[in-house]
Length: 197
Image 1 (cartoon, rainbow, N blue to C red):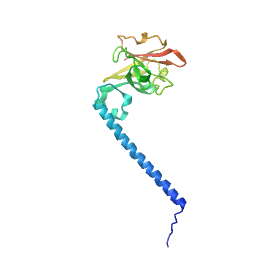
Image 2 (image 1 turned 90 degrees about the vertical axis):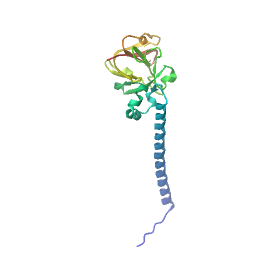
Image 3 (image 1 turned 90 degrees about the horizontal axis):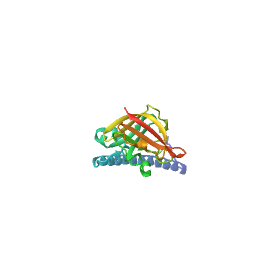
Image 4 (image 1 turned 180 degrees about the vertical axis):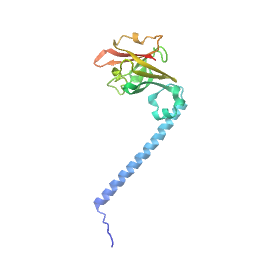
């Protein structure tokens, strides 16, 4: 018995579309694979050729976990487990810095004494301090700088005037001060202070 296949215009169109979809999917996988190799090469090159502090947001998490000993001294970040925050820190509190990172008040300490940090909380590309109003006394804040990791707990929550900078003054006590705007109150700032444990 002989079976005869007839190729109608509809059959040819269906086959053509099917092959086009398969080719598109395969080419997408190939491009993603090549991009991943390129990203990894750039990360390795940056790590080998720098002595600067690199905000963690510039480094992929997988690379950090696999090679933590190689980059510990280059990490500058803040972690707040309760609000699921992990953010890179950069020097300064200009709009340009805060659009990318948590900013460090330059006049404050980076390791001992009072470390002052600021970030946006809404309306910007990144709003790292969006949920810090949820923090309660005793909540943990983890700070990493230049190979040093410190753990703090929240001990003071307050609202301050935008001209009140006494909370950023240096102290003998090791603490961290987090500052952000207060919603719909442009002349005030939310200030959360944490002491090292």
